[in-house]
Each structure stands twice: as structure tokens, then as C-alpha cells.
Image (cartoon, rainbow, N blue to C red; front, side):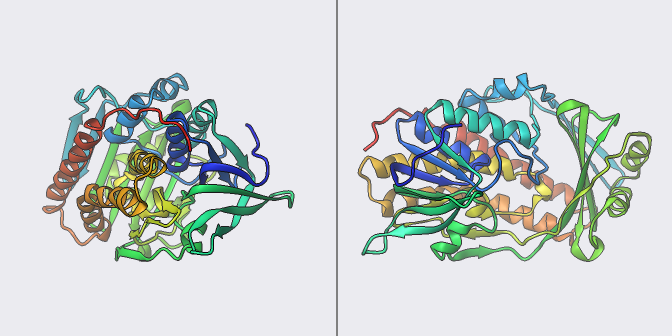
Length: 391
């Protein structure tokens, strides 16, 4: 990892080196910009995530030339998705489309490293273990850079034409620019998950019953991520007992298989957070990933959103650096993101709300599938990014 000198000048500083931030930095540097990537965490560390990629996410990695690294890390291909609701079991084969013939769910310790490593190869400077504490502004109030402190107490700063907040739901950048929430969800699913070994499974599994949902996501090292989601009032503080109970309520058949597999020593718990869309651009700044747009994890689409929006924002920033005004380029980024997200947001809200019946959930899942297909078509139509000089 290369460390950036203090008070260096960049075209872009990206705050947050996870999926959205690392992807944005990679695409900008590959297009010729000087980029600094800052993250308060450690390189390659794990993070809370169910980490399933839908077709749009796999398509992005393929378009960027990074899918081979995910496959080489031993990430198993997923060629079947099975839906269970009421008494129905509906298997759906992953048909080849837009060059994607399988889905993947890499552990975040793999995906995030692949993205950061690609960014570094493209010329991105990185600072891990460094927290941004404030933004620099000129006399007109335009954001012109960042200041912060490393884990060792060292102060640092960097100037930039654009500062990108990719630092999650509780984004410091969003707070520092006072980015307003323009759309707010009303539901919040609590999710428990852990990694089982020796679990008999075949591809992604999604189980839905009123008040309980669960799933299986095959991942690296022969493990399967098993998650259980339910309304907050049914989830308590999470833990293994809650996970097994919700799995049993949503799919007794999966609960039976879990009993025969090797359970994890630890179960992680996400208390839930209502979805939102923040205003995601301003004079000298932009937001991407969960910092700008978040929805309930029950539809497992967050990572795909992150990779999608990274490219949308990278394209807009390249236009800004090239002379297009932010009011045009960055506003168009958000407008495109919001248009692609509207139906996904709506149907996720309905599913996460658990107010549907066994008879209604199939139609909601069809709506979800159609909205994802529209997103894939939009991504496939994007032309390749061309390199541009910084400046």
C-alpha cells in the first residue's frame, strides 16, 4: 500500500475503501485521475455483510476485468436460485445473459481486497487506519479537501477537486456537508447471520413466510452464509437462538439441514435501519454506496448497488474534471441512481415490512426480479470508460 504525503493535491479524495469507495477510486484512477483513498479501518478486514452479488454486480466486475480474481480466490459459482414460500419450492436456473453465466458471493475479505488492489495498481494512493475529521472549504463554501488523523495520532490533509463520501450508513462526510435525506423508508428488518460448514446446499436459497425470512449464500472455503431476518420486535438481540427460530419459521427444511451441519462459533447481528436516499452531491462533494443510498438487506442487493453506483459516480466526476459543471454532471448521477433504484427501493420496503401474505409474496418477488433485470440492461448499455488526463 502506498501512503499519501500530507497536503498533497488530488483530483479526488475518496473516504471509505469498501466496495463502493474502492470501486470508485479504481475507475477514476484507471481513467487517468490522481486519487487518494482513505479508510479508518484496516486493509482487507471483514465487515458486516451478506455479500451476495446479483447479476448486475457480477456484470460490473466482469466489465472491469476483476471477475477472474474473484473466481481465482475459490469463490464458488452459483447457477441456481431456489425460492420457498408457503408450500411452494421454485428453483430458477441462472441463464447466461450479458456474458454472465453464474452469480458469486465472495467474502468481503476477498472482494474488498480485490477492489483495493486493483485501485492501487491503477495508481490510487491509500491511507488505511486514518479517519477524516473535517472537510476543507474555500471562502465560497465549496469543499476543497479533507483533514484527519491516523490511528497513531498523526495529522494529515489532502486537497481535491471532489471529495467522495463512501463511508457507510453513518457517513461522516454526509454529516459534515449536512446532506439531507430526500426519501426515507419506514421498515427495518433485524438480521442475524453466521457461516456454516458441511451444509448441503445448491446455490442461493431465499425463504419467505409472513414475519420470517431466511437464506443461504454459498461462499469461500466451503462455507455457507445463513441469514435470518424478521421484524425488530421478533429479533431481540439476535444470536444463535434467534437465528434458528426465524429459520425454522421460514423454512423447517433448512432448519433440519442446519442441525446436521457444523454451526459457527459466532453469529453476527444487524439491528436494522430504515432505508433512505440522501442528496448525494454538492459543490465539491458527492456520496456513493450506503452513504448516499441504503435499503433493507432482506433483498441482498446492497453490494450490487454499490458497484453500480461507483461507475455512475465515476463517470460524473470525470465530466466535472473535464469541465462540466457539478450542477449538471453530479445532479445527473443522482438522478440516474434514483431512477434505477426507485422500484428496487419500493419492493424492498414492501418485503421488509412483512405485511404480505403467502399468496402475495410471489408477485413481490416477480417485481423484484423485473427491477433487477432493468438495472442489468442499463449497466450493459454503458460504454467503456475512456482514459482522461487529470487536471
